[in-house]
Image 1 (spheres, rainbow, N blue to C red):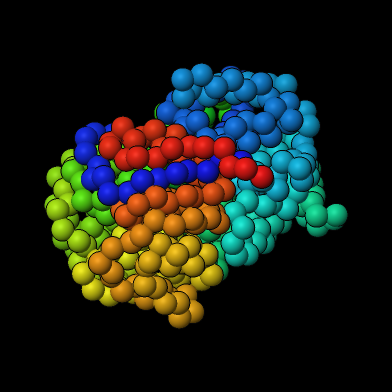
Image 2: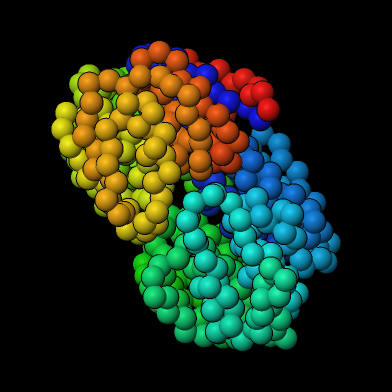
Length: 419
């Protein structure tokens, strides 16, 4: 098990490129099951979650090669329709294969998912969607078992937007008979990318980026080559890291229209931004002004940026309230930030952060993917040495994060952690 040793106090300087989106890559990989043939996905990040999904596709019968951020998936010989517990427990996004397997084989057996160790994120909307499309679904022995001789279009309304369920139903409906309408659908850029992928294969999806998506089923889809979108959460994380470090950094290969709410928050916090369609330069020569945020479904402030914003506000010039309306118990990083000297008080799903003069290095522990990012940020801004354990979490969602940050002037070492 690895750990990071972080020596703080170095402002970030220079230029860095944002990787392809993790949260878009995983459903795109699953969608390749819908069209037997050879698919090529470009701009795919080299991450643990991507490798886990690739392994799952191989279990199903696909041939998967990954060279220079191009993922080649040959889905012609897929014949196995089960996603086993031993694999799915390590990554919640494995449930994305439910819809494609059901659409292609008429049956699917997918373990109930695992992943980050915080909070319940049930798959009930995925199951409800498959049932509305005509599948018989039962839970047995920790597995979702779904069967359908033929999926048929239906009107599906979510009580709350769900990115995972929206994507899964879109994939299943792409080969269903008739028209499927998803109301209160997720609007995230990752959903738009998936809709474009399905359409490029010959599907008929309209309304992506709105809360009403319509899918007209087709008889078959064809394999394609497709370029992945940039990772908006990596972009937001690195921008906050540069701001917290007191740096001057330009980030390239991003979509600024995907991170507008984060850019607005950074400007409100007093940072100078030079923004183009595909790049952002951020300059920071003073502590942040306090800015309250509330997480919300896209285009609101992402819950995946909540921990990083708390870290940024921990050295602000006042007090800020950070409220998570998506995952109300996603605050395991708070106790670890306190170990570094942050002044944070929790009240339900709200973190009240009072800025302090400085943070002090200390041993801390990662608890989930985005919590890890916030602790790396705080460690880079703290005085002295911070030891961050259990960094396998960060490897799930950030591509060689220590190398990227070190190239900008950070001092982070990856070391083996004694058991």
